[in-house]
Image (cartoon, rainbow, N blue to C red; front, side, top):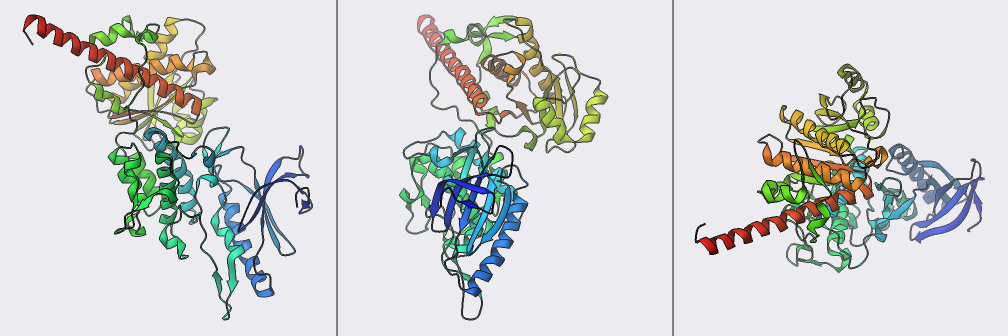
Length: 511
């Protein structure tokens, strides 16, 4: 089969997989310049008599129409072509460069709560698109979830409905039925096993993927409560009760007790009050921070700042979250647009936000008349889910220049001050890749996190939650590392203060 040309233009290169429903091949499109790669799925009906073949043709056309429609969304592979050769049916789809989640969720490997939440949001975002198009996927599992190389977003592949082509039969009354349940053991809920899938069946499957990520166990390795049929998993994962409650609702035995669709499940995940877990952080040396400044009215090494008043309340960390995602999709009170002095909307996050906000946002930016470095101005969100957009002009950075460090710090202070003057409780900053503008990611992350933490400690504002967000896994990891370092130093300094206070009581007899 490999090396065969099908449809007159698709040269099969190698087999990617094979199952009870058909075969999947990597192929090249010989009719396009450069012969780009594509994926060819071959579907072979088990019954090829005239009546069954005609029913399969009808189903194939209907499901191809669905795939063409869904392929318009950037996180679902495009369907390039569909055709029949003799009794075989073929789908030609976009090749997604990346790795499926089965390569990440290896046996025994447990992800952190933070990673699990980011993954859960990532999957539900694309599943929401599917459900809004009135489609049930039916076969969500790690191997059908690809983390795309270019942006780390999850792409959903291999829709289960198409597999009916292989399994349907015509009964004696001429009615079409499906011979076996479509789905994968461990990820398929009970109602789907009897051929009655619902939107909440997909929610169950996503929940099982996340349980697998948190426990390091395949779903079939988990026990069930013999009385209720519920999955027993909490004792095998280090997870907060709030997240566990959301996951439990996703995987209820009774479909009526689950979230009805991806939209409701995604809303529940986004409403978790504490997304970042700061437990079990690694200890790092205090010396690493002496090069970083507290950039404001006075310049002090971080260790001195901490000694004075940097960590009076460790709970402040619960208000600061770091996520992977698209800033233009966040349903929050305000997002921050990091731009140039002209608010030009021509590059990076600035372009993405202004494009998503639409023409009215662009006009509003023009009316602002630009923005000085370190200054912040506010507009409505217009077509964005966020109610407000706070615009700030970030500096270029050339070598070791404390002035530019201070200017960047001022950007955060200005944005937060503007937010405090409006009814804003949740605000999202882009986790800036300032390497593009000359400043190392590590340094920009430290400045960002320190300024936000300092503001939250010193100001009695409405702001309840500050989020840093990026689609880039490298930037996400750098911000997480910076947060851990700051958290560690705070814990060290807090412990030092407690020891000093105890020693003082011991020496003086006074509390």
